[in-house]
Length: 264
Ligand code: SF4
Image (cartoon, rainbow, N blue to C red; front, side, top):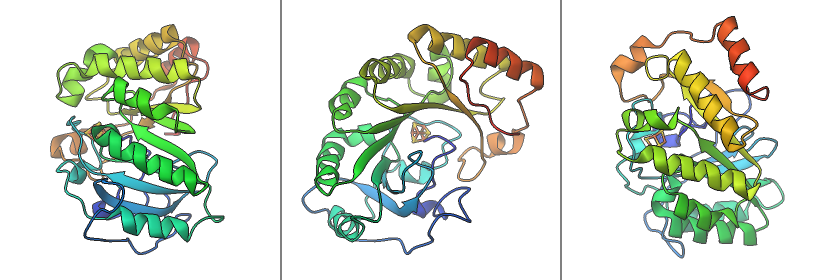
């Protein structure tokens, strides 16, 4: 998931960068899924950043078919469940009227889209708005979920031609492009967001990515700095350096005036 998203509890933090705002509540644990067969790795009980403008609980599903070297939730790749839907559902019932929304993050939610869909339907029945964090690994599966989502946070890893190198998965660029197209076509409220590590994305890559997105009809993409927490690639974690120079910011804004740039 994107560097701005929360770490799952198994990663050792309740919410990245939200130390003053996120509720540090106990992590729910359970042994068996019930009703919805969703493999969950953890739950953040309260977040104000994972769904802009909403107070949300965040569910972290396990499993992902991609292997981005900067993934900060790589401990979820294995797909083992550590939390039951029954426990989550019971928790959410106690938050009706207190939280606005539930975000499904990961890992990659589209890797278990049928179960995610069933969970979203239950979440909506409880009266919560619904949101999804995804890298768009399957546009077809994303399409099946869009009708039951109120907001989508969609990672854009870079220019589509660079995807195979970044995700270590052949064909991932085509899937991501189709997912971006599906979200833009749906007019669903969304955020496109990109984690930037200068070893993976050059200035030219960023300029190319923005040109591609503008050509597809995107008005905005949020660029976020790489963060080393949870990164499985020690070399990448050690080689990060500031990348946003004033002249690059000017060029990026010239291509896409709505681009959101990091502070430093
Ligand atoms: S798409 Fe990449 S960053 Fe997101 S969970 Fe999978 S490996 Fe991690």
